[in-house]
Image 1: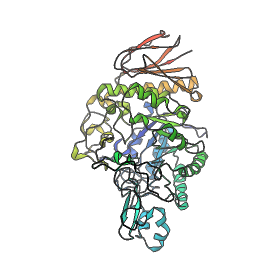
Image 2: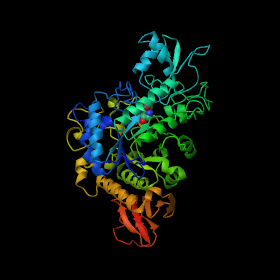
Image 3: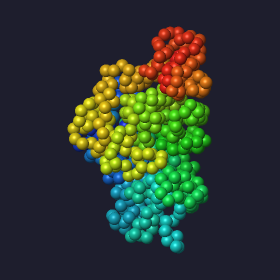
Image 4: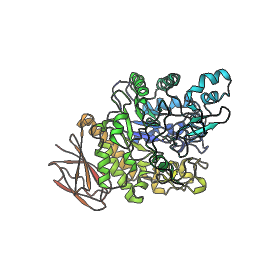
Length: 538
Ligand code: NOJ
């Protein structure tokens, strides 16, 4: 059971991201749904997570697979209905798991009634009322878009509405028009949306595009650093500009201050998709009276090397207890794939998750990471991500979104019919069923990790302890000391020696470790390549 205390329940908690379309399909229509999540609550509770963040399940045309919301206060029939949602919340709470939902406030779907009204499709009075819910501008005298902003998905961030002759702004797809956060009516609508879900028992929100809500009041063009080269990927286009006026405007903090006050009344965890790769930028996005936390994305943008790992783990310093630490998401190639693929990629990801588990802040596993999954293979003709392949997200975002492999057999037990996103079957040993009974499996390694973490947080009072990041083993081993706990991860592909405080007791080791469960440990231990250990010191 979860307690209703108003304490910050997420201190010491571990999370799990559910990409709903691909998690579990209860009604065999090929798409994961809320009832599917409910059917896996036992699995999640055995894994040992304290909360799940569920990606959008609201009514949607699905142009960006749910991040184009047509109604913020309902459930798309594909995923269930409000009663299914209520049942999920109640049963999750019975198992001690909290539900965190996704808010998408930067943009709605163009099929949302607000945008349809803004276009004039529901009469003149509605047009008058809703036009200013979105950002419209006349073209400049010579024609063309009102300024030089480009979208995150590439191309101009403006689309012409031929009927009015005005352009509207969209930082993502043209069917994802940006809301006008300078209009107080938009803020009022959203406070109602937050309360709607909080009253249904959600324990927090992940805020999509949290850095983007309020735009420059004058919609000034961004300084252009270089011309956009022909054929540039979406990120290359983005990087041709200094993003002074489109994103990270300080006025967005006013929105979060109000939301924080609402969330605090419910004891809910407000955290954002804070896509800033510089700790100073993160600091500005997370003032003490704003969101409680934000995702730290830098670890998703590095090559596997001790130096870069060290930089992104230790870089946030005092900010770390406001961060959510995730090795993967539905937007990036899976960590084992990014970190070299195969067994090496899996071992590296687990080692990173061992460090995340003991860092200040909140660790979050992306569904399937507990099975050691790399990207699924999606044939070119089956790809569905509206964002095509580019230099940063090599195969688009389909590879990290393929269905969960629950068991060997047709469609890996995800669904009885062909799933919405068709991919090659996973080998038996990558399925949850096969890993269940194998003590050395990734699934059981993650279960042990989360169990030992929970125990140590309780017995050692880790929540209040600061992190001290160090290096050992000629720099190859990243060492995190937190109170009486020391977590060490060998980033090298060779065995490496680490020094341990006298009398250290081994609490956890990854399967590749050869350290052995002797207590107390000697002052020097050999860490196998890419392995990690956790010790308690006196
Ligand atoms: C971030 C979400 O994680 C991503 O999937 C989506 O495409 C964009 N925001 C736009 O909502």
